[in-house]
Length: 229
Length: 229
DNA sequence: TAGATTGTTAATCGATTAACAATC
DNA sequence: TAGATTGTTAATCGATTAACAATC
Image 1 (tube, rainbow over the protein chains, first blue to last red):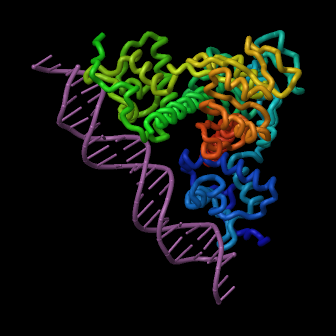
Image 2 (cartoon, rainbow over the protein chains, first blue to last red):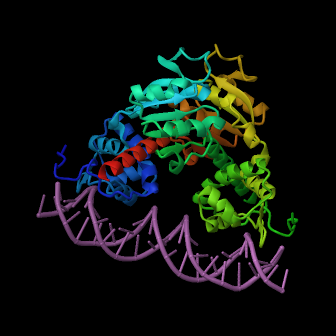
Image 3 (cartoon, helix red, strand yellow):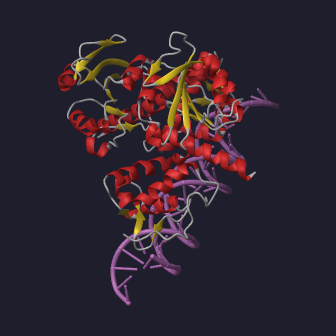
């Protein structure tokens, strides 16, 4: 296996700053496919081979990577391990963010018991709930704190990401409380539309129902196409 | 309130068939905002006012709607209730799909206990699991069936949507089993990349981790911007 | 070296926005 | 009617794809 030259731009350096959201949303996908290649002990891959596996064009893949640096070698392709490490760096996996979940309901517990954080270099450090009956309990070794102690906990511990899985109607108030702490971002499952402009921190709103609706649309379209045939 | 003319094209008629995926993915968002407007008893809305609320352009909104029909009135705007009903129709809410969940783990139970199906005109009719200890139990009044009886159940009952929340490694095999039944679509949470081309049915793959990674990217970018300032 | 494959520029395609005539 | 706002066409913008020189 050839060595990777050391003069090339690294992901940390950051090539452009105005990366399009289309590219950003493809990065986690690259991350997944590269992890899988690594697990299968694939050492190198060309943009062409990757494009076939990912059902994309080789051109797009090269363009995407080149937004952040020069990760490949002419005549060789991409070193899977190196490329994976660079994408991980871009996505902040190496930052080892700490996360807490607010809302110890079904979804909160499901996330707490999953590997979703660990698989991305993160650590879930706490759960929060208003229900005094839950406070003090543990789920998968994660302690449930009282919502009243949220600010105190954020001051005394490094909290990077806050996951909102409590009922929708308290989302805005809690987000406002969080805006005054030094947490770094909010992963919002409540259905409330939180905006960075109002909270002052990066926010990712998850609407699982939207995905279900999209499936329904696909089903309807497929049925219609069948009838018309 | 003016009456809606009856000569206009309806959603059922279907204007174009090659709707772009960008438009399709915005439909559930319109659905949500319109539902909220309805709940707030808003009777009419102009594309301009909607654009402000949704943080989009009025032009895009009008273009999107006109992919499916003429839902508004010049000089008046859109009748919220009518527009909502049309978008619902397009998304298949009125089809009253039945859904079952395979995998009665944390996520499966979280979905079973949520309103995600009911809020979209669907009914969750069954859970499935391989664990004989769970078979026969009920979660929120939904009976847990043995995975061995999946095909039998699909034959004897109307099953439209199958939700996959079991471990990833059995995703492909189960999807293959489902491809031989008359279910209509698969909502896949397992992380396995299932393709319509291999299973022969509409599929929606959900990657919650991708959304978390996107948040991490946003956080990193925001931090970097702060440092550079 | 010759072959392979990248990084990058140029061409194409599609999606968004702007403009305005139609019309309620 | 006059004002408002749609539906739709035309202009712009951005993203994807194709092509190819650079180079490992």
